[in-house]
Length: 234
Image (cartoon, rainbow, N blue to C red; front, side, top):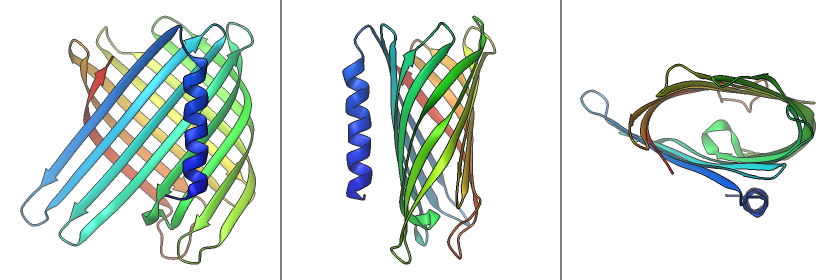
């Protein structure tokens, strides 16, 4: 993975850890899918998440890895890391600084690094439902895999996060991020349903859609992922 990507994600994660002491919520996810018959494939999807708060400060970080292999070798490979630090202004509003790095050679880019800062507002605040809206300026660095060209562009970062308790043991979430840049716009939507099995163990079904308005030649502009994974929270 590119050194810029590694350095940025390490900085984001270290900043996250430095903020938190009062409360910590962590989880790990693991999804394994294997098919046999006409087509033989193996898929591994692993994630780690942590959310922390200390006074008016809040922070979150996540790491994700996806690997799909089949008869013709490796079919997909992706590594994604992100971190965000927020400061509460009022009971509903906050300022934030976020950073995200992605290594996905099958997307046509060796890496993409995005950072942004801005203002967030909790539009819905109920015991069983929340809606957070965020907006702010940002910057994206990309490296085209085929040519090695580097692309830098300013962008507008928009995010909406929705969570609804379907029952005492199940939850629906939707995380929509739009990074509208000067040259291209990237939209990423993650819809998930999590249901508790027993204790801290849960089952999670999710659907991820990523659309890039302008991609290198020979690359599809839309990627989708459907995942079923076990989640352990601690």
